[in-house]
Image (tube, protein in one colour):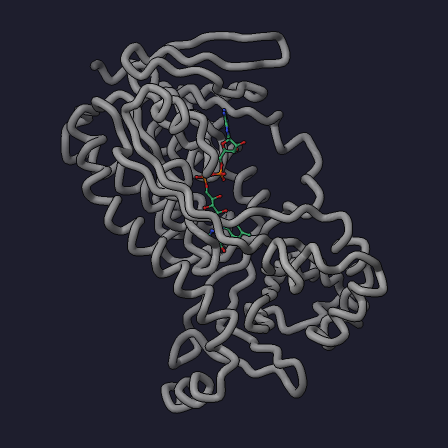
Length: 382
Ligand code: FAD
């Protein structure tokens, strides 16, 4: 394949946009296909704002394309966890002994928009919004897209699926019998709630990731640049203690007054948010192989979606892109060697973080509140 052949990237989310930037910098023409309209011109879907904890892994990738400073200008560093018990004062647990390490709260939408704009500005990148991939012939690289004008087709020598946890590219490979996948859903879902600013200021300490560990449920809150907090409540989807169990505004208020008493006065729209914001699903996606014949590959959540409890899904997707770029360096841009090498180097790491993310759920909802855990933290940081 010559360096001039166009690479197709399906999905202009975090991984797809970053990948387009890296490929364009290598001199490839890139066609970036996205099922949604341009998010920079529309509204954020209700209850799907999601702010992310961006850590060093993700920042490293952004530095390589010169975008870290711009993204960090709106980031809020969180230097530790603030644990909110049912009764009593919140306890701060720093992430590092000197208290100088932080993870950074950023808006996923704003990060996506910054990456889209960066990709669009590079020569050779063409973005096609409103293009939903619905068909892919992995042998010939022919893709079919559903668009508002009807179905269209396009062909590329290499097709990279960066189309998220429910990847259509992965689905097509599965349909052709060239890939196996397993999907493990938790019986937990998540719902976003909001703590608005109070008198123009943050209602809680913005330098911490706030956690309300409650055993069978858990809530976290991350700060936003507009001085609000986005809370994410994790709870079983069904059963007597679950999202489904609170049927009326009074029941919602009673539940929060009992289990999250310090949140209630800070969240005036709690009942409305609770009743109208959607419940997101949580799960782990595993598949193999991540590439077929060096012509079709999967990256980010499309290859390995994980539960969000380690805050590493996007960071990991960014690391994938850096590693694929390194594999292209190491193979002289021979895609038939680079894609298998990328899978070998990344798959084990993705599996490790998938397991750690599941384990961290137990730590965040139970162990951070235990007296033994808190005593150990105090000794570590004495
Ligand atoms: P996505 O962001 O899902 O992007 C996929 C893109 O593909 C989308 O734009 C989609 O519209 C498009 N697409 C889908 N299907 C098609 C199709 N058929 N044709 C064309 N386009 C298509 N990660 C962190 O690192 N830190 C955190 O703190 C963190 N917190 C999280 C909290 C929650 C509640 C959740 C749910 C996730 C969290 N994550 C976090 C994970 C992070 O959001 C994902 O890992 C990350 O978004 C993956 O990026 P991606 O580009 O692979 O997929």
